[in-house]
Structures are given as C-alpha cells and as structure tokens.
Amino acid sequence: MGAASPMFMMLLMFGVFYFILIRPQAKKQKEHQAMLAALGKGDVIVTRGGVIGKISGVKDNELVVEVQEKVRIRVLRSHVDGKYDPKAAVKDNKVDKDKAA
Image (cartoon, rainbow, N blue to C red):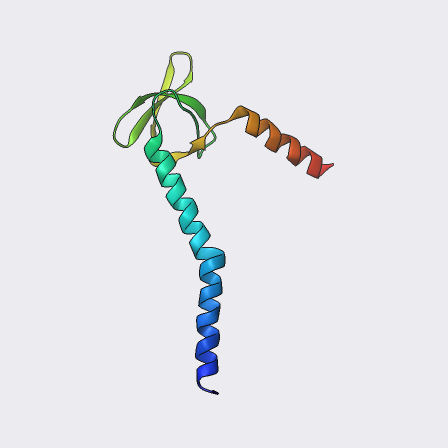
C-alpha cells in the first residue's frame, strides 16, 4: 500500500482539478463558440474592447457592426464578447455600487 498511495493521491488530485477547473472552463468555451456561430443580423453585441453595436452584416469571420446611425465597423467574430443586454448591464452596475457602499 505504501507505493500505491502516492499514485492514488496524484490521480485523486487530477480528478479534483478536472472537475473543478478544466471541465467548467471547457463547457464555458463550448457555449461561447455556439453563441458566436449563432450570431446574426440584428443582434446587439459587445466586443472585447467594450464597443456596443448592432450587427448589420455577416461574412465568414467578420461582422459589420453599426455603432451609431451610418457608422459601421468591421469586427472579427472571434472578438465578440457576447450579446448585449442593457437591462442586465444596469443590474450588474447596481450590484457593483451596492458592494462598494
């Protein structure tokens, strides 16, 4: 049992790391990829840089995003952080202010 115990502990640690760190991260990445694939014209998005706009055109890896009336920018699909929900952003901001007080 003396030689098997360290091996068992290493396997146990790997199992814990897998279920606590690796598996949730892989699931989150898979969900993000599915969201990117489902983006279409009319969706309101936010980029990693914080730019908020409405998709007005879709190409393979590029999105044409209208940030203001008649102002469009091209954004790589991979640089989209997610869909933008102004109501959720207000709630998040309110929670942050409550924590600071």
